Amino acid sequence: MNVVDALLRTPFSQLPLEQKLEVQRLGPYQPKDCSLEQSHYGGKHRRTFCAETWYKKHEWLCYSEDKIALFCFYCLLFATTRDSRWCKFGFRDLKHLSQRARDHQSSMEHLDNAVKYRTIGNVNIAAQLDEGRAFSIRRHNQNVEKNRHVLGRLIDVLKFIGCHELSLRGHDERAGSSNRGVFLDMVEYTASLDTVLRDHLDAATVSKGTSKDIQNDLLDSMYKIYLQHLALEIENCQFLSIQSDETTDITCVSQLAVIFRFVKDGKPTERFHSFVPIVDRTACGISAVLKEVLQPYNAKSKLIAQTYDGAAVMSRLFVLQDQ
Ligand SMILES: [Zn+2]
Image 1 (cartoon, protein in one colour):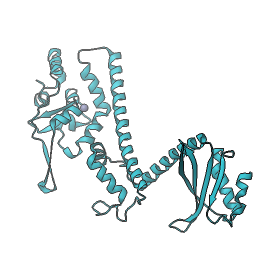
Image 2 (image 1 turned 120 degrees about the vertical axis):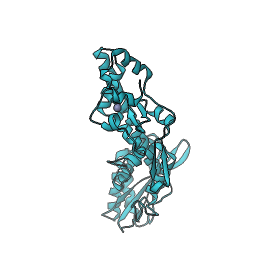
Image 3 (image 1 turned 30 degrees about the horizontal axis):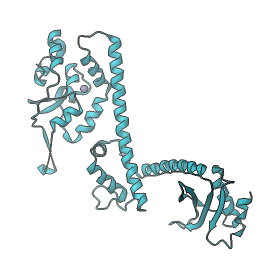
Image 4 (image 1 turned 90 degrees about the vertical axis):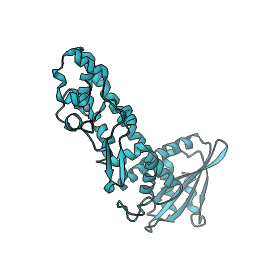
């Protein structure tokens, strides 16, 4: 009675209530042996439907042996017409199953039908609304959890690359390039070990989160969090030392590298603060820049040492302590 093809022949709405309740009791038709598969690259690669995993992941999935396709049990019963793949023709695209199933699962039609299914024979409107809302919140939370997981992986990749002082970008980042740069190749490698990230990369249509803008945004966000931690460490330390030297970046722009040193948990600790561009390279100019760096930390009474390369010409920096 709950077989997909029988339900396609006889609309669920036309069944008497006893039969409707029986269909609900039997639940989605989920045979373990499914012959659904998809070939890629001219038949060299075959993708098969792993029934047990998918049924566990999406309890609403059901299988039609006649059509060799997947359906949504809830939408099949309540004849949703907007997304006919899941309730009329069946879904066969295994490559995009993960994303399409998630999209469908969070669609309003599906959520409405899930509520209708669970409340067959029950006319308590308040309970229906509550359940629909709870269902929608659950879906939302699952999406948030997945997005956080993907973001966490991208941040892990950035941290790894930063630790090893490698450049993020490649000269040729197009798909098919033998060297797409450390970031993209590292994300691909991580995705080969992480199915959630793999699904995201395969299915994302709007943003995969791997563009150079996103890389820079993530780095900026990580740096802001780092500065917050640094501020706490400086607040808790007894004495502070500042170390600075001028350096030139790859575009020949002169900038000042600023480093803090302090004692934390009984151990000497060194923390990079920033690269600050310098316009005025005189002692007074550099002194002003360093005072600006120190200003948010209220470290006037803690600053006990300053270290500079070429200190002889910078001797006027004593103003730092005086002011
Ligand atoms: Zn559905």
